[in-house]
Image (cartoon, rainbow, N blue to C red; front, side, top):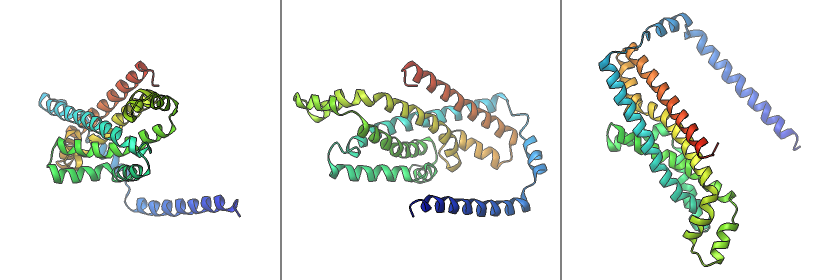
Length: 252
């Protein structure tokens, strides 16, 4: 009986994949035109590299970088603050609400947070910072709480037995054990937030995404191509910097 359950699950998954594939194939057969797509792609070349446009792209790139850095930094603080009670360090009474907050922040998609933040703070980079900070707090907080749960308790217990309070035991006993993982997770999420920040502009959160939305809306394809290239370059630079920093800190 137990052996049948995985088989039934795999069979159900296969049926879902076949049904969804049939539905997609029916939709593509009626409206997908490869030749028209190729014609559209040619409109993006050559990218606009005029001085005025490049200055605007540079400003939008800076906004995107600021969004990702401040959103990640605020999330790092919020995640660290919630991870300790979420790990059970203060008992079940503190663990359950902390876990619920982290689950809620993580469950709401980042673009939905961006749309809500735009309504609250208006169009611009501030809305993007708020949205990134809220969603990333949920993601990092859950990861940080799990690292605390899996960390060796002996150093903190030794400090507690020596008379240190709970905060000092955490700072000098547990934090050095998990600090490497915390930094690695934060750097990875910053890389992800660079890409997310570039998309959040579609809902008015500033940066390259907002510029890309405006150029595409006006059918300025050559200008849009420059924005896309700037987004790819910014993501590559962020990933390279993060990898170099992890190697320097011996985290990777």
